[in-house]
Image (cartoon, rainbow, N blue to C red; front, side, top):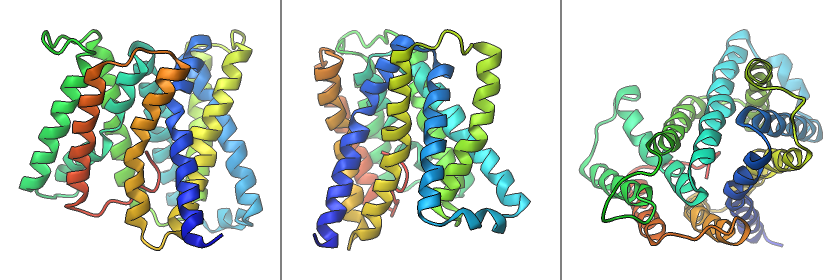
Length: 299
């Protein structure tokens, strides 16, 4: 199989797996609380990425890291997965999956907003229009089908879902400047985050009430939301002759997710979800024509 076909195969598998994430979140939260689910998912990812590093003969890279680089991994691990997924899981627990998923997907737009104070970038007209489109989509999706009344059924849940996109965008800005090996970086992020998650679990939850059904959901999330998909996505980008063609496929993820949400969770999809999602994706697409952003690590 030629590299180009392999690139699209890996990208397709990645989008397919990421498309199941929202359903897996909701299923896992039926049996576990936020911290229990995040603990199981994170430890699964740590184990998987460690074996990837062993397979790729990259363990020697640990000796080359400085104290500053390890400290940077602590910060990144706090942002993602610890803070990001904690906020995201709480949002999913409060909102229908079809609402939480697209609201979380606006991170490329929040990235533009954060780039203004952090990277001192100016907001161009095209970016402003993209923001308006995506913001309108957010409002419509948040109405949960009640577009005439425009009242949010769970305002806190909406803000948390949007807040998770800000956390991810902040993580992306700090991570993109880090030129270390991508798999090594992610492993260290999850390893340090695992310590934080374990402490949080001991303080605010417990190990004794962990349900076996939730364990399976957590393992699935750790592999197919956080672990395997990351490696597949990197492989797809590496094999692609033009990375922008592969990167643009990421816009299929939320629509793929809605299919699984409808079939697996049996949620009745609101017409506002489709309409709002189209506006959000259109806004993101318009923004991407204005600046080059590599979707290395997120859907």
